[in-house]
Length: 241
Length: 136
Image 1 (cartoon, rainbow over the protein chains, first blue to last red):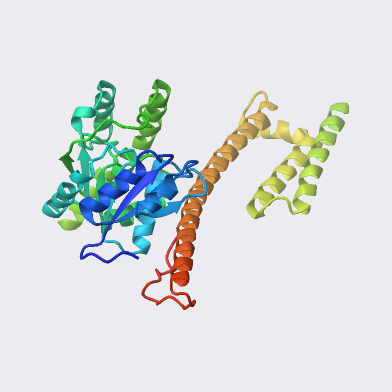
Image 2 (image 1 turned 135 degrees about the horizontal axis):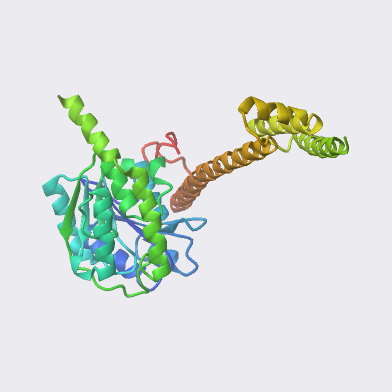
């Protein structure tokens, strides 16, 4: 097992058929942060798992497809089992630059936020901006790039996200953010630079049909959550007085 | 009178089929109870259709035969809702089981490799082992 650093950090990389990029990403993360790296292969059909392992990552292979969030959550549960203090997630397709990670971690230490999201506002397409505006209206969550998979979670956030309540989510996006807010955790954003995906397109925003499905799905999710944050805050305020 | 025989026959067949399946233990606990109640209701309404007219008078519904249909459709909707709730619960369990399976598999491989590296198999130190306890 790898050496224990003073603040134990686990980098979780959910990957499905990312053989082309996963090894580079793993090596980059190890070089940039020195963290333990865990690749969760979402029932990949290619050599993702072997390549990640030979690049120096721990690899967990899911027996069936659970989606990007299902894979990321597996990492959260692993982190809790191994008592990591913090979890960093990033995509396996190489769009997140490992050399941005130290800044993200520093931002977490500086702000003390439970979650720090690395955002890249420039990459947002018109459709995404519109979607964001719409969801901002629905939920009141002021995060710019809510689908960004580049995030740092502290112990409390990991505990929340490893729980059963997060298991029926499908993407690491608004559903996750709403759950965090519901539990009174704080979010912080840090602008970063990302490259366009080397491999394939966005999973969520790949076709109009997918976009429609995603919007509908997330809207329903919002309706299930609406008001809970406000109620919680009111309850806390009531308890404080 | 023939109408009553027809409906009686149908209801006896339906209730008989349900009873048979419950007796064969094909239905789990609360489901069996639900279906026994359904079989009972079918039997009563099928064999004694005047019950329907009596219910119609009781609820002030002019066209009494619509009553069991409405109640029946309502019951079907509730049942379907319950089924989807159960399916969601099961999906959650399935996902968590798949995750745990993958994590445990990873740990087995790790332990095996550690044992091989040591050449002689020895028990892992308790500190190296994550706690098994805790919720799924």
